[in-house]
Length: 235
Image (tube, rainbow, N blue to C red; front, side, top):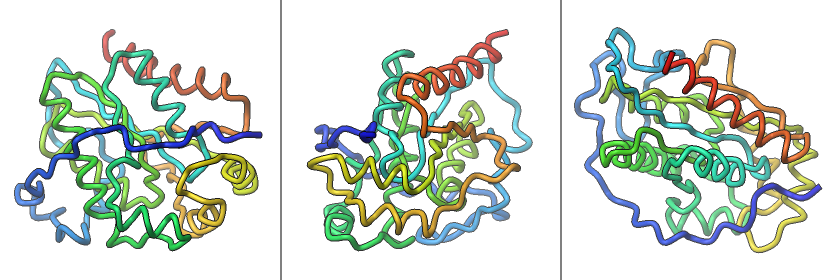
């Protein structure tokens, strides 16, 4: 079975370098820019204790380990709903890409700035007028997902959703081994599963989808989850 992910060249996106958004966080959840301490936000989306505006803006993160089909599913959701799409891999630093190319797993320190940049770019797209944005991001650990959740604390109109693409390690190994031209090699799949923290039951903003099935089934289910949320909001 082939990977759902096509080779991912940089798409010519200009990755902005916004000022860090940590200064205005409540003291109870603020952490350092390099090592956030926001675990209590994990079950909150949108921001706790804040009223929602009549027009919510959505950040849809398509997550999971290498080979699960993030790019394919995210592009499908974005195209079907007329939303801008952010390819997370295009925002990695050259140093991160070189590490992954040579089989060296990324550390937490390697990921903080990348996650913050994806969050800030998503918010910029919403501020530019989009009512939703679709982002690919592995988000392997709960604290990585928490970095993105911070967006709801800056803007109470933002709702954050994670679509976690789940499959056994052996299935993803087979897919990654079959694809050509991507810097993420099969040897990196095991290292990602070593640190993977599957979403827990109290992470209410996560939808899990079994991607060991056919691509058409996964596309259908992912899009159905998105439409269910949007339709519920409009009723």
